[in-house]
Image 1 (cartoon, rainbow, N blue to C red):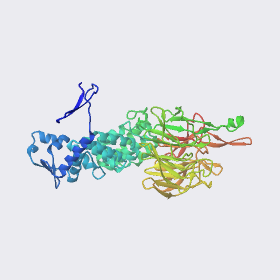
Image 2: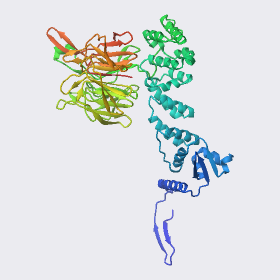
Image 3: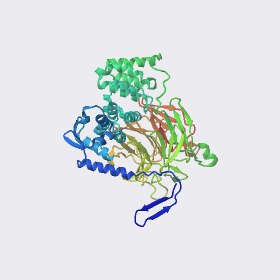
Length: 595
């Protein structure tokens, strides 16, 4: 390659030469140039310069460049390059597209910018789909996916199905499956036609606590239009795993059914199970693939009687084990990297989160996740405040951490609240309690958090009960429990909040109270077989499980608090307790999760 020369034509020519390496041409791309061209074209459009076409949408006229629209939209490209009548027209009227929506689309075509909100997203989606503006469709899809809620998921699904918008339909379908229990309680889902209904109730991917929830929803769907839907009862029942539903519940449903045709269908399937014919119902039905089928017990410690005599009160930290409700057996799982007492545990997006807790007399702020599919542990962002024996719940895609024990130095209790966003992997402080609390119970139900009992900074054991609305940040006082208690277990089963065992002063409790959310009142149920505190409590498959805990052991003149391995199970249909297979090791101050 010859030396590069810069020449000037003058009477006195000057030559500047410089040797350069023998290389290929170098490509330079100027992003700002494209933006400049778009800005200039948009300015020309708004000023009516060089425009060769008028488009009328609604009651408004728009001056545009035919080539720009053809290059941006397959719809306009076919119109202007094919043999359509509009090809040579100077003015075209668009039907079915409001003026304000077309104006937004024009702004996007000429600038690449679009502003989407709840008021325009549906019409933008439809118009973008009509004109083949895939970027608009993708942007609207992302917006709507972020807005998915139990109240609108079915509406989004039907909207996407009508437009054949596969991505939005897939996301809405997945959301309905993962949140089926809540979505099935909305009126919107009752509008589904029979084909879509059968698709959902036959799916392996319904995230449910029990098969009873699918049956209850299906009967609700039939009763919404019983005269036109009663004939689907046998087809519906063929998709429900009735052998997984207790016979007492099936019998109650038959008694509560008023329509004779629906009652006949239920009775026929019921008889098939009772008479053990199994012509209609499989006797070996497995829970659905995404149904909650395991109880995971995490953290805690073991303090057993022999330890007292041999070497004082020895504390052995325990890791993780799970209970298979189908096989009715406990299984050991990979241990945590840090064993901990009284952590917060919750399930979110198919992961188990174990947050905070106590290790070696120090409160922790660390947060781990466990993936049941891969059996892998991962670290995520730490809380702002180390805490143990606190409230932790998952609600509407977030984790909420409330109160807890901080350390042994004053002030040793915490009144702060934090919220974790898994998408941003970030904790945010969101408010405070009216007073510091620890060892209380906290559960989530239908957009609200419920906080019950606990111990205050003045060592007062509480029977207070209140709800928190994360949308408004407001606390609401509710009727108090009948018994003050702390170190109890709490769970939601049906429309009840159950508060199980715990301590009242020096006494271990076997009593169980439940709060009727609809009736706004407390009542007692039969006591547990064993008084205990520090137990893990969960609801699954229509039953309440109380796992492990601490009770007082006496031998001769010695009294000590020891951990137990027994598991009690409460059936609300029979209003009775039964024994379940015990833990492989006794433990207390642990937590449980269902997944």
